[in-house]
Length: 308
Ligand SMILES: Nc1ncnc2c1ncn2[C@@H]1O[C@H](COP(=O)(O)OP(=O)(O)OP(=O)(O)O)[C@@H](O)[C@H]1O
Image (cartoon, rainbow, N blue to C red; front, side):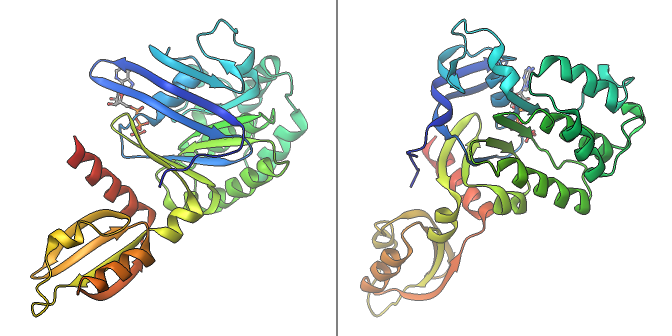
């Protein structure tokens, strides 16, 4: 079941659409709540980075309406809302290669009214990087740490992180999680991150927005999703004369595959009702298992492919 949240939206999309070459993003319809962490999850090329760029006005939306922190995009509101956003792009900008981290930080300080050098140096120390080294001379992971420190140093209201842990070693990754939790502590900050790291999602996210081929497959509260979705393995009982058609009417059915002769695997988001139903139809329930996020995403993708 897709959620609707009562919380005020940090990002609100109403039929948002844009296209470049063959790729179409949208129409997208969703509200991303303030004060929460939302993970955007989807296979390569599904449009996560494109969505981020459009929220920053770097790729103009061509249809629909989008609001970010109360400012309507393409509504002539100017660029001032962007100073309230921290954005970490997926890849570093090569035109900044000759700057040191501290020089980049100084440039950023002119742009962001809330810039805080003390916070910046504290973050650099926590990530254990030297701010006096040219960005081009840093390893991929070290540069990521610098970029993260700069993105967090102005304590933005909205933080957009595109694959933030790319290149980080496990220690730096833990430091990043600590810093992101600290960032969220005041309760009014919003974090939206695109990531392929399921452990990151499990540890950080309140909500998950699944995206595939430019379309939203659903937005879910993470804990409920992990609680609700189960795999049932059921065995047909020849004596009872059960059939697959009966299984297709299982409550909360999301996916159904034949796993062997008379053996079926069901993915359901109403596990108790689903299990009771299967038994009542004469199937023997052999196993009930919680689903991992990657399996839930695969199931949603299979469903979308069957719908197309
Ligand atoms: N400037 C561009 N011009 C044309 N096509 C583009 C451009 N930028 C991205 N695309 C295409 O848009 C689609 C979505 O790309 P995007 O980078 O948003 O996906 P993603 O979900 O962030 O992928 P990944 O997980 O690999 O980072 C892809 O098919 C990509 O090739």
